[in-house]
Image (cartoon, rainbow, N blue to C red; front, top):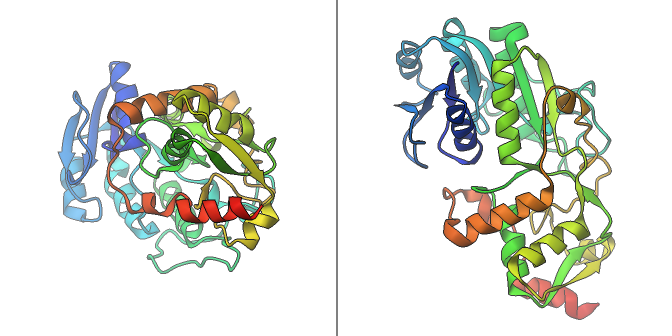
Length: 337
């Protein structure tokens, strides 16, 4: 099996390359070579996927059985289209990392793969779409829909779309789980978003990678929501963070309206907290039936802490600065209760 990983030096891209290599596959990665580290054992090709000439040079390294695209997150649809057009004759299959943000109903209502999508053309530039006043829909979601359309136009029935919600695990650069682990390690009274029994569905990066590789070699088609089928309660999640860090911290469960009154930003200041009804109600049964296997989230928490405590400094990324409530603000809220 011969695959091309678009990206391959960060988090999910690294995990996909490592998973494929462990199967004995021939793995090519394509990236600019400016951040992250090429995985030992891959054929690393450096170039810019937004430059047609670089893509045409890359195409000459083919053919591949499949392309797995992890690097289109910040690209407009027309840049995705540039790559799919250049590589369409050099790969049989395209596995595209997308997002649950492509759905019209995200994050307000429960979702399946049959839920309506936002609308965006495959040739849209970065200006297409908008973000609603309440944070939904998002311009990001519109752009990702257009990217999916670009892939579908080039690869037809051999296009596969993986739509994860939140991906956690060793190597995480966004900083959601590392922030909670560091906060747990500090101990003391910890602001926690009530209710403690709220279930969340983050999925481990290694499980997403395994499913992507499985789909690269498979015959599945269309879209798959990639979320943890069982999930974990927020209380259970924080308990694991406290346990693995050996902390004596004590969560103080604060009602959503109180957090809102204090101007706490959902999703970022308190990572993984969002009050919308559908945010953790994304059906992943289709993916499970197609081979998705998810380890317990407690294992993800433990392994991330071991990575973080050992050498956990991921690729620098601006999104990391968005996550986590300031110590002073947390203290003010707890003191007001």
